[in-house]
Image (cartoon, rainbow, N blue to C red; front, top):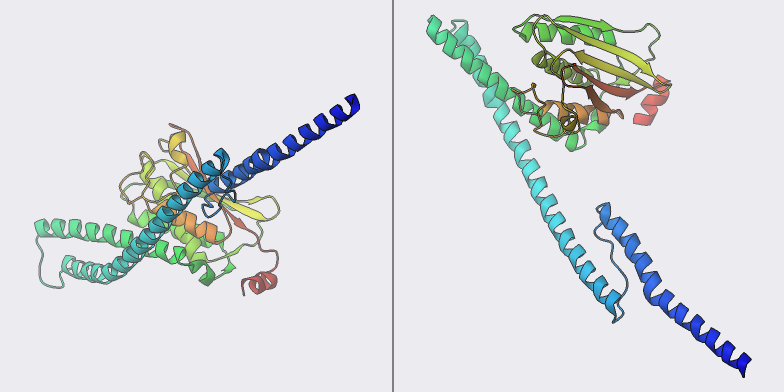
Length: 315
């Protein structure tokens, strides 16, 4: 009898364990898995448990909440897409009249429509600068729209001439800047060949140089350098001696409409566009900075060891 009682007791314990395992442990494990999926934004995941107990009721509530969140996500995505399309269309339509206005103002400043007094010339120059700033904003929005629409598939890859890029961008910055700065650059002789869209990479460097100029005091040095990074990348640096960037602001600099302290005066789209261009080339972009010690913006680009193989991969 004692043996029989013990066997029945053990069998009862084992049966209770199996019930608890099936109705508690297994659903909780599934809940953890689905919760991790929700954490990564996969709100379509659902809890497949419908028993009439507390865990079943909890699963029903959580599934309903996830469904509501997913609906709101879809509404936000549709609204964002509509907003992007609107911005792209408006930017495209605004560009033509802005260019026409710039040409007209240039003609007026040169006296093409008759003599212009000094007072009127100052007013026209202010209009011309405002028109130029607005045109740059429109072009930045158009370029961002292109990359977000998959423009990276149409990049024109060619071997980069770093000295040509540096000299050209420095010359353009000197032409447009109203203050004097010292520009220096360093390009090692043994630098590996990098294939990328030269105009787009030049756009990135020019944007970073423009930021460095606006953050620096006159007569300060701005330094550019390109160097080998490991075996498969090169890294480009743009260093200034400005006021620096607070640690809490660095992470947000490459997002839309964000400006660093001491780098105001623009729309906050330039660094976001730089990020789009560099990531489209398979690289990364970032900044190292401390308040009062200047900033070093950098980006990386992958090295293509063989031009023929690289072009075949792009095709």
